Image (cartoon, rainbow, N blue to C red):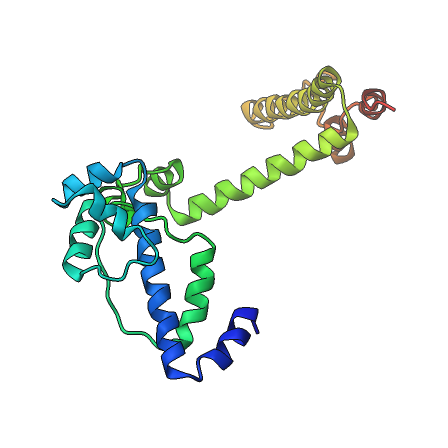
Length: 233
């Protein structure tokens, strides 16, 4: 329970004191709002906008002034680019209203700066543009690919492999596989071309055993040593 509520509970048991308090608060809040919303305008400039005298604005900004009229408040609201709201409230809403008032919640935006009615259409983002061009399935595949790339990159960074050594490792692994596959393909073409009728075979044309083919596809043994050399202590 707030200290303000504790102090008002006893005071508000008296009807005259209760209404005297809320009317005094109403006058003070109106004066504070007018002064805050006037901003950089002088009292004379605001008076000209609502067709009154500077002294009239000065009175309205006095927290003890209670002779303001609703018609005057309507004119002020229009000068501020705002709307006027008048409502009947329960006494129970007074304490949080006063506490919010003390926090400085008097700032208001003119209609032309009101984002609800004057917000510009947001420019489409890259994500929105991409979503039009690809299907959800493709988007999911791209996401998986990105995650795989990030995972591999983090692993390489954790190993601290020198880029030049890493490239040598890749070449050492890829090239033997390419050469071996090419040799097998040539052998298959030669066998198909002879139709199995020719008995003349050179040493290179003798069909390899399955184990020989598998061994030819293995990467060179020095790859592991290159990996070890590429990892910095």
